Figure (cartoon, helix red, strand yellow):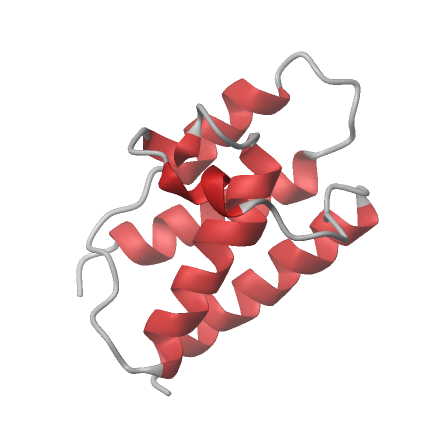
Length: 109
């Protein structure tokens, strides 16, 4: 893996660890119907942490493992900020990590 891929992989692992720390990690898989959404972030079938766990993280790991092209841009942090805005949850570290993913994927290559 190149440096960018290593940085992204590390950030993805940190996101998962932080989600566990915040008790945002689901122990049970989602029903198949939850994945049929055509909306951004599957907003009509999942909450944001579920989308991170079941869609974004696996997709990014798959891209890295297969050496497939990575997205040219990423804007996950703004959605996370909106989702967590009214929660009483110390999620600043998670937001920082999601910002890091946005920066890594959106930086010129």
